[in-house]
Every structure is written in C-alpha cells, then in structure tokens.
Image (cartoon, rainbow, N blue to C red):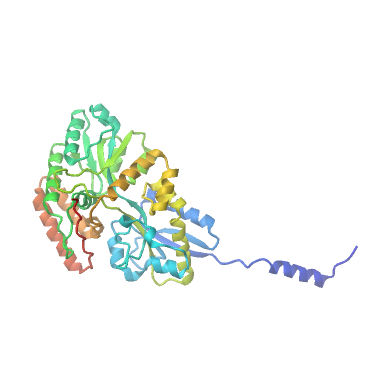
Length: 425
C-alpha cells in the first residue's frame, strides 16, 4: 500500500478548497411600504419568491410612514404618488438605475396609460408602475334576477343605473348602489370618461364644470331617495358589496381578485357608466395604483440589488402572478398576452373590461384630484356636505375648486399641465 506524505495531502486539500468559489456576501435592501395587512401579505409573497431565487440579494419588507429619507425601494400609493413625484431629488430615476446596473430594460415596453406620473420630460421611466387598476362597475347578478333584471345586461349609462337602482330598491334591496374612492371614481374618472378636464392649461383646478356638477347633483338625488348609499372615503363600500348588501358598486378593477377569493356571490363586471347625452362620450378611464421608487444616495451594490428586484418584477410570469394575486393590470403587452393564456376566464372578463376602457380616446390627464392628498381631502369633505344635504352640488364643487387652488398656490408645488382632450369625430 502506497503511503501519501502529509505535505502532499495538505497541498491536495488546499487545491481542492481553493477550487471552491469564495462565498459572496448577500446585499440586503429595505423595501418601505404603507399597505394594510392584507395587501402587505400579498406583497410579502412576491418578495419571498424573489429572495428564494436570488443568491446575491435579499429584499426586506418594512412597513414605514416614509416621512424621512427613503429606503432603497419605496412603494408609492395613489394617495402619495404626488409627493413622490414632487420630491424627485430624493429618488434615483429607474432608467438610470437599470442602465448603471447593466440590466436589459426597455421603458417603452410599458403601456402609455400606465406611465402617467412615473416618467420624466423625455419619456424615461423614473419609477415602476407595479400595481395598477381602473374603476369599473361590479354588480350582483342574483340581486338583478330577484329584481326581474337581466343579469347579463348591466347598465351602460348613469341614467340606466338610476333605472336599475330603482328596481333593486323596489325588490327589497336596501343598498342598490354604492361606491368606493369617491374622488377618484366620481371626479377624476367620470371627468375623463365624459371628456371634461379636472385642471386647466395652467394647472389650476376646473372640476366644477357642467359634467361634474350634473353628475354630483344626480348622485345627491339618489342619496335622498336611497338609491345610493355612502360608506366612506376609502374602500369601505367594497366590503359591503362583497357581503351581498349592495346591488352595484363602482371601485377599482383589482377588486375582482378579492371577490374571486372571498365571495360566493355571482358577480358581473361592466365598464364604468357614462353620460350618453355628452358629446364624444365615452372616452376613457384612468389607470392608477402603486409604483416602486428607488431612493437616492445608496451604494452601488444596493442599486444592483434594486435593479435585480425590478427586473424580477417585470418578467411576464411575475406580472401574471401580480394579476392573479391582486387583480392588477399587467404592465406590458407581452405580459398581457401571457396572462390571457394562463389566467382563468373569470379573471380575464374583468381585465378585458378594464383594457377596453383604457384604450378609448382622450387625454392622459397627468393631474388628478385623487393624487394630490390635501385636495382629495377637500373634495371629499365637500362631497360629504352634498350627501348630507348641506350644500347643492355646484356650490360644493365651486368651493372645492377654490380651496384646492389655494392649496396649490400655498405649496407652490410644480404641477403637470393637463393635455387637451381628443374629441371623437
């Protein structure tokens, strides 16, 4: 038996160990968000999937008020996206982060309606439009049947909604119609859908024109006659509808995922109603939602981690997962095609309604009431005065516009100009 000397054995062991690549330190980055528990858990699922497949980077989800310096990754909600966009010095543009990290990334792959407020003057993406939706009409088919209505023929106009609401009330339903996010649905989107701007060419508020006054006055008459029930400024109405209390609901299209997972109701999805006596209507609704922003002043390793996470989020498979979990619109045309082949037919019905609305003619409306938090609060205060029969619609909207313009002047905030609406010929 041949004996091996200790020096030779040691040398062999050294060569063997040296062949093993050194362990690279994992770069950990924080991801700040302000979501509630349910939505936070869905986001955590995506983060955990990324961490499981990434050897070099780890994302840590942190619930934070985000009042100080931003983290590496930061989630802006529709309510605070204006604050993010007005404080762009605190954030590094997404296109720069991706280019510096040498990640293959084409900002033009994202559909135009999702790029509003997350692009610079040259059209480059400064943030990622991750979880977007647009308002639609959900309706309870069983409630329609009980009222003698065709469950496959939802109302198309607000006048038809009024007729349906009356029949639902007559059938014994105490809440024929309700809405979540009143400023977003009934000011921003009703204006866009019916060809009326919420702001003028100089950035001043103008959401007190004929269309908006007529619409709020109609809702006020419904509130008096119990056709319309108001449950609050957020998404409180969603829960009442999911519990079977209401016949119709206007809210974000992403609510379809919640209904699918938690409701046994037979639900239909239809486009947001419009006014057929308004020239050029319907035009289009608006896409809003959460976007991911990257903080300034971080290390190169942290930016590479952020770029890797962004690249993971934009893969078609992950976008389909975002759509499946939260009902959100896929960000790119490729992801939409993949979603159409992988999602259930019930999920696709709502997505197709949302897509159809966004493709209508009209302006992209970069300035929105719902995205300027102090103005949104003012508008909802004035709308609540209308529901309480303390003010007529015109007075309330006139007051909201005046108060909102004072806020803009006081804050001296840079405001994006609204683009002119393209009328149908």
